[in-house]
Image (cartoon, rainbow, N blue to C red; front, side, top):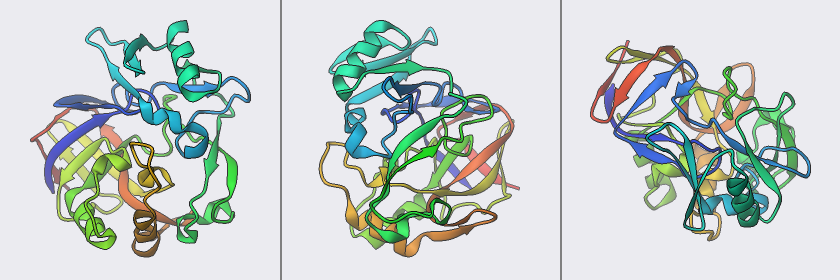
Amino acid sequence: MGVITAIHRYPVKSAWGESLAEGEVEPGGLRADRRWACLDQADGTVVSLKHPRRWSGMLAVRAAVAADGRTVVRVAGQDHLAGTAGADRALSECLGRPVRLSRELPADARLHRLLPDEAGMVPDWLAADAGQELVTGVAGGSDGRFVDFGAVHLVTTGALARLAAEVGHGVDPLRFRPNVVLDAPADPEPGTELRAGEVVLRVRFATPRCVVPAVDAAGGPVDRALLAALARHHRAELPGIGRAACFGVYADVVVPGRIGVGQRLSAG
């Protein structure tokens, strides 16, 4: 299938994460991936860049896992341990709203979402209009992670190259917050099993996209050309759910273990 060229983990939902040379794949995903999220103290919703106007401050937040296994958030050049009052204060100041970091996915977890102005970016199941603001549920992982659908998110260099041609400029894979970047000509099909050493992943379905990939990391304008390309060329049918603009794939973990950059993921 292809060689793993990058591994990324995002310890705090919607914050920038860290690149890894190797990582432990657990049944629910990469170890420590999306284990934390900020919760809005006012309404209890999960903080997410899916509403970039409301939570643009998350673009200034980075998270990593220290050698002792604890999660550290960097805000305004200062490091804070996740789960401490100091981290919550720094994040609240950065985001302009009172928030707290949590490892517990609320039973009725919801988030604010701003739909892109591009009509083709609105998935069928939302039954909403382009540009509309919504509050929607958060699926979460089976082990309580703050994920949208699948355990592991993969993108391929071939799909990125085609998207760059459609957009007219290069596309940073980090726009899509992938866990694994795979040097392969195309995305694997749903149902495909991918093996690397002892690890086995099974592709679940294509990844529905929201506004996040078009959000500028430096706080600049939304990349409307990217949204237009996703809407025009990457709208696909997800069985039993409906059509959506998709890029990359989600995979479930069949057999956990370690993966590393430079390792080959083989199909079948």
